[in-house]
Image (cartoon, rainbow, N blue to C red; front, side, top):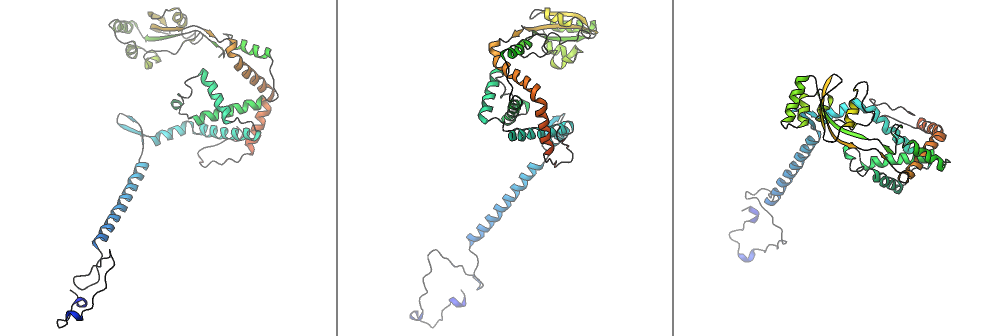
Length: 350
């Protein structure tokens, strides 16, 4: 007990003045040795907790920074890691300037079309996407596989629609123009005709270098081996990577000089048929027919709207194309383009 709190031994109880009452909830801790008042135990606990909390936050921040800055894996090749940074470096080296130019060009076109007052509205873009999806139902679903988003698609469509509007201003087409366009695009002799689909055949092949390899491949197939596995083992054609499967063959797909008679052979085969030992291009071929698709001509009633749009655009390009292109180049040359990365070069007005 401190001297301040001791009582004179000779004093009576009546001489002692009562202490003033303490405020509720207030506790004063005193030193047992007569020193200064000590901090309450609860306060010490709070300080320790606060320090621990700060340390935890700091540790979490350090871990988050390490996680965000550590090399991110992109692909593993025999336990060797190729980082995402390495991939992006190769990607930039292969197509960086081309992509940078494309981004700049699209931005300039958007600005130019906006200045001209011909950019489509959001509703017009939505309507165009819906129209395209009637012929290509997987258009939107396939965007991620092509590393694209809906914003990318909308930008492409907006630029296309804006340019069409600009090119076709003051241009009209007659019914005869539309009919001529349809006729030209249903002619089998027209390359990439819009409204004609040529016949096609799907085949898989095994190109054997000699009779020994041919016999071994035939025996494997006879004993039930998978065609694709046999092709990977014995074929010397590049299609072996796909198990011998060829792309769709349409008339003219195969070079008659390089593969004489093969296209005709494939089209003459029935579905499920297989021929073995066909001599062509220095190999002995095993050919299996998987299917045929007949030629198809889209009726004019279904193609009429598209025919009119495309015929109008074709005529508009002939009339206004050179002028519009010149105006776009002039707009681009006045643009202020600054590349923040000296490794990329933007050609103004390209």
